[in-house]
Length: 172
Image 1 (cartoon, helix red, strand yellow):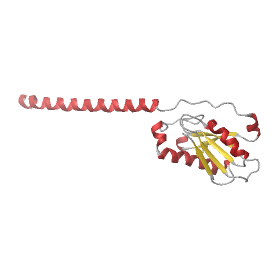
Image 2: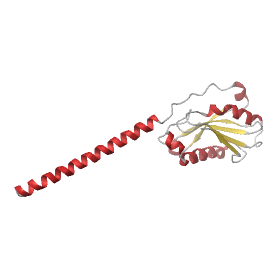
Image 3: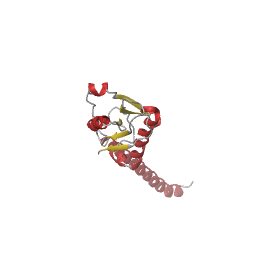
Image 4: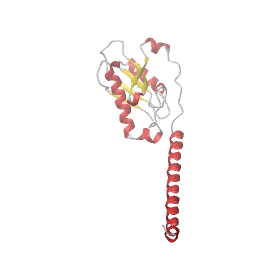
């Protein structure tokens, strides 16, 4: 390579390297910003209060629902005393809460003859954490479908002997 060719190709090579470095820095900054945003929008875990002794005497118990990638959803399961009697309600808490937030509604439903399932959402309560549980992702339909699918899977695994849920409820 002649001196003239080297002199003309060097600035081009340096500009390509500079552009590559700028692109790499931009990608890194965006990735770090998204990681920070996801961390900031993931809720702090709200602890469950102690369970009411009367409710546990009536059959309220903790269950674990297997989900994708080896993760577990924690839930409270409150069946009727008579197996096979009553429909099943699935109550889903709101953002930043846990299953205990709907315990009052569960008590009323259970007293009216319903089996009640109260799952903790991903990264809420006692459920395992995951990378798709930040506020923007929970707001998406995909997350709601996953929560519903996991709740129905719990019922199918034998928590309820009454078949699919007949009612669902929640708040946000």
